[in-house]
Length: 211
Image (cartoon, rainbow, N blue to C red):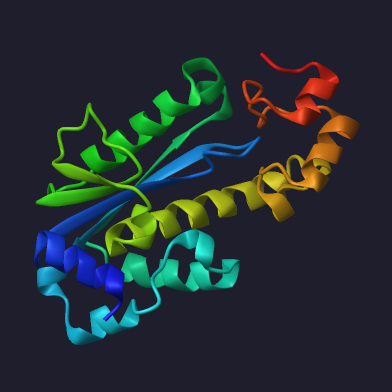
């Protein structure tokens, strides 16, 4: 059995277990996307556990494998919720406030409420859902890994679609992160409405664009 699935079962037992994680926290452009995934392990067969044997932290999976794993997660999840924060909201409220708020909202939208939720990184003080913060949770808990995959795949798909509106910045390739190509595009074309101006970027400093 995948050790992340074994971790969930050992810590929370069979039944309703959720995980929450985000994608896009460190990007220069595009939304932050948080996801929560609710698994009902009590209803799973050996085939269900076996089909997610390769579930892992989204950062360790290629884009093609993430897409495949995401489809299997969606078929086996009791419920999946996704919450996004626009760049303007991140600039106005701050990244950490948006991140925490999105994770709290994603967990709050789950119904029924899980007996326990695992959250990657840090506790959510405003959440009414019983949860544990796990440092490196997407590499430890299957539910968190599933949420990381859903959040990453959702955000990547959105950025690929947004590339059609803003082709000058090459979002289809770097999905908003601070690659060398992206920094060059900012210097050449300036910024668009997808860019987070509150971030401290070398490219932004060159254009004196920081808030």
